Length: 403
Image (cartoon, rainbow, N blue to C red; front, side, top):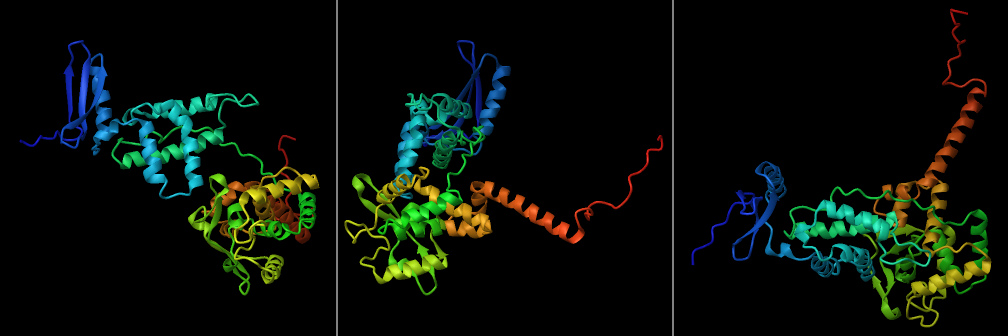
């Protein structure tokens, strides 16, 4: 059997159809049997067709798609989640990705992936802002928040980037999309008085006092503090190694996995008070876990139990209804206000880089700058006096010649 001759990628052909329209065709890939895959463009006149054909040629230059490029977006997202995401991320992260893609599937899932355009993506994001939930919530909201749409974009961008790598599409249609502006929500943290009341409240919880004191002085993620073992504690060096994070599966099953990010695996130096607390606690340890379960000391305390206990303490003390993660925010805010530089704080928190830390806690650094400006102002006044400042020339104002 003679081998099928391939047309070179990007080779275009133009013809006038029997219905009067002009048709342009280029080769954009090849099937397993060697037969070409075509991209078609249409126009009423040849003059209108040629610019469209040239754009298509440029878009598909050096591209060789496979016959699977005809699959629907829904099918590709299933494959991406199973083959690309599931083997490399935690189960909770995979579920978050699935949840983020649900509204995308509802709107674009039945469209062939090769036919999805940047205009389709932009329209998708606009629709999600208006009616992304599909049905109204109790408070009447049907649109998704700008931050949620930005999160959906981040996941979809990864999926479509992988589709480019798999030769299903020539380029990523999410590139260049105009995203809604991120809404920076104020951090919910204790003020100085509330922090003091919280520390007093945990003193009344002997089974949880050490746990929450350690959290407030280290800023660990909930899964990180629940997954601590005594082998992670070096009392001689006064450090904690953060090597795992504890997550809960369905049915309350606990799973010890890797940290959230590569930088999540870290060693932190403990404050003196926390070091003393853990040294004392170790002498009374009955388990390999620093904070074992009350019901079964052979197991770690569950993140759910820690969350429920926090809520109980807050209610009893009449304190704001903070999330567990807000304790981490409180630690970070206090650290920056106390003068800890963002790079050092990023290492303590396990952030990927200091720029992320600055982005999250920028409001604190702004306050610090104001304080620094006030300190510098006082310092200059002490040196030169209130009436004389070094940046002002000690000269009389020029006289108006017309006076």
